[in-house]
Every structure is written in structure tokens, then in C-alpha cells.
Amino acid sequence: GAEVVINGSSSPAVVDRSNESIKHNIQPASAKWRHNQTLSLRIRKQILKFLDAEKDISVLKGTLKPGDIIHYIFDRDSTMNVSQNLYELLPRTSPLKNKHFRTCAIVGNSGVLLNSGCGQEIDTHSFVIRCNLAPVQEYARDVGLKTDLVTMNPSVIQRAFEDLVNATWREKLLQRLHSLNGSILWIPAFMARGGKERVEWVNELILKHRVNVRTAYPSLRLLHAVRGYWLTNKVHIKRPTTGLLMYTLATRFCNQIYLYGFWPFPLDQNQNPVKYHYYDSLKYGYTSQASPHTMPLEFKALKSLHEQGALKLTVGQCD
Ligand code: CTP
Image 1 (cartoon, helix red, strand yellow):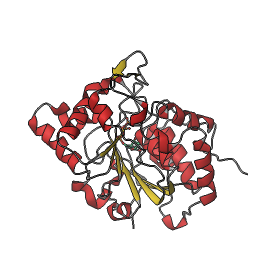
Image 2 (cartoon, rainbow, N blue to C red; image 1 turned 180 degrees about the horizontal axis):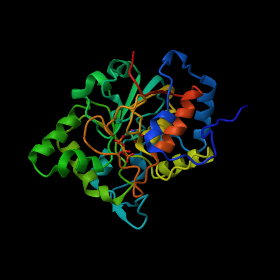
Image 3 (tube, helix red, strand yellow; image 1 turned 90 degrees about the vertical axis):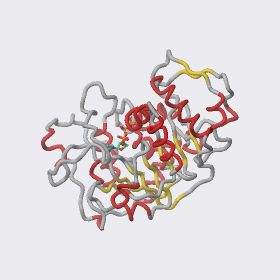
């Protein structure tokens, strides 16, 4: 069978920021896009050689006990102890066990979602994945409300909830968590040491207030496995973004995958400015040397998969 070509060109990308979004033009005529079932299945199979979303979505209770020592994935010299709270919140069985969905939406956080009117469409998918506790209520028309899984990097507690400095911020976070109403809350707790306290605060809040969420903490091998998969497809990612992690996991349990809010460029296809996030004033940081992400590179790979029908990217308005 034909190879999956994810990274079409071998020449280094021409850096011309003013034109960046033009080069990534995606046909507005969504009618042209057709799902390629064969290719999707082949990708699922390939990814299964590196990771199994059902297992790697979360560490299970049976595999850790309180007091166990874990080395952070990005800070190998730093360790954490598995706390009683963390242990209590580990799932007994995978939240994705035997799960299969006809269509899934993965909602990235790009400002390209603003005025997209995609909310209704997003909410029609069988399983909706969102990133970093992004707000939905105030943006429902453009991003929808349905949430089956939402990620939460520990840094979100700092960025969006002022590190819970006072009761007001604690209450805000608590309300957001309550609003998740039984969905999966996916917390990468073992990635970087910086999140230690923040993860503990959230765990404590969930237990203390009996918040109805199904917590999941990605396996220690997930990141390397995801990077390994993309590397074999010539996509050299230092540190995959949450969005790419979610796509890679979703291939396991979703037949058709629809991506919204993936647009890591400051201008849209019509050269209008695009916010980095649809909900805050964070600026484009990934272009700096310090940032570990290579979003435009990831985007190129996703765009190529879109063109081959393995996934559908929506970067404009929904009909
Ligand atoms: N994203 C994008 N274009 C943007 C912003 C985000 O394509 N302008 C996608 C990325 O895949 C990103 C995901 O949407 O991972 C969620 O956005 P965000 O919360 O900003 O994630 P990151 O800041 O990248 O968080 P992380 O460091 O966890 O990846």
C-alpha cells in the first residue's frame, strides 16, 4: 500500500511571516473534503505501534501507590511523590475502555474560532475534546458547549486562575470544574516539575468539593511515544502540543476526526488578524527560541492529513 505522506516537502520552510497564512491556505469549499477511511485505519494501526490511547490516556490505580516516586518527564532530575489525593483520583479502569465514536471534534484554542459560528457543528460530534479548560459559555456560538474531555496543563492555574491567590479565584476554578459535569479532566501531572503544587491544589479542590469529573493523568511514556510516531513520519517535534497529543490519541477511538481552532498564525486566510487564543490576550509566543512548541510545523503535518482525508481541519466559518 501507499505510504502515508505527512511531511510532504523536505526543503526547509521559508520564513516569511507576512505570508505565512497564505501558504497554509485551506480550501473554503468544505464540500470537497472527503473522509478517507482506509487511510484513517492505517494511521490508527501505525500509531498503535507506539502507544495505545486506551492505556496511555491515564495511569491507573493498580500501577501506583501513595508515596511512590516519579521522575518528571522533562525534568528527569526532579521527582514527586504520589500523594494520597492523587492516588485517590487515579481511575481504576481506563476512561476510554472499549470506547468508539463515529465522529470526534478536537477544539484547539486559536482565535480563528471567533466569529466562526462553529458552535452548533462542534456540538453535533459524538465526542468533543477541548484544551486547557478554555471557557465555553461566553463563546458558545463559536466554540459550542459539549465537552467530553478537557485537558488542563498545570500552568493554566497560573495563567487563567491567578494561582488561586484568593477565595474569588478558587471559587472561579471550582465553578469551572463543576461545570464539567462528569466529563474527563485530563491533567498532565508528570511532565514538568513546575506544576507540582498546582496539580495538588486542583486535586484537593476536586476531592473536597466532590466535583463530578473523571480525572485522568497521562502515562509516563505518552509523550515520548507520540514524538516517536511523528518522528518516523519525518515530523520533528520537540514537544508535541496538547492539540497534537489529542489528535494522536483520538485516532484510536474516533472514526472521523474534525479539528477546530487550530491556526497558529497571526493572520487568517483573508489576512485579517487572529488572536492567539479566542478567550484571552496571550500573544504568539511559540515563535520565540525559548518556546518548546513548533506549532507551524505541526500545522503543516495536520494540513497534509486534511488534504489526504485523514482528518478535517476547519479554519474558517462553519456553514
Ligand atoms: N492551537 C493552535 N493555534 C493557536 C493556539 C492553539 O493550533 N493559535 C492548538 C495547539 O495544538 C494547542 C491547542 O490548540 O496545543 C490548545 O491551545 P493552548 O491551550 O494554547 O495550548 P498550548 O498553549 O500549546 O498548551 P500546551 O503547552 O499544553 O500545548
